[in-house]
Length: 148
Picture 1 (cartoon, one colour):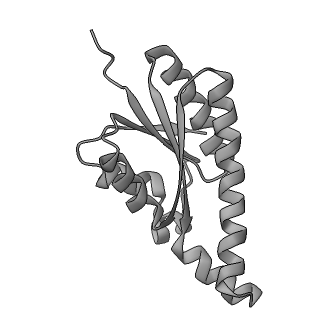
Picture 2: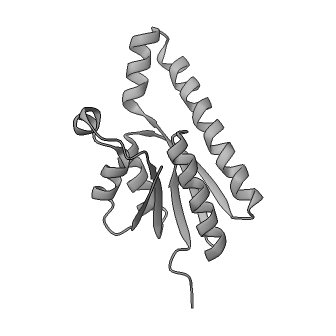
């Protein structure tokens, strides 16, 4: 019998919650002989915010955010390789939840494993969380939320 999850999307943002979730996803993939696709999304709104704060050129800000994203991706890729789990990396730009769901569908993923800090309060009501949005928008692809 084939495992139910063969391809797992693992979005990371560098937070402790996302790194914790990536470790759980690697362990799951290891047990299921599954492949993981670890992804980082450069938030379009962060680019604008950093340009306003730093007064740097857009290209400079994008490069810096890409470098951070690649650092996070490299870290999780190394963890997966150490566990002998097949891994691909994706660096995208846009609205994180939209890009995560789009990638899951494009890649015909069987599961999304995403971290959440379980935050509450005004900020969450105002902005929502990426994990919440992925849960709502991910029709057809199951989502496992790992709280931290």
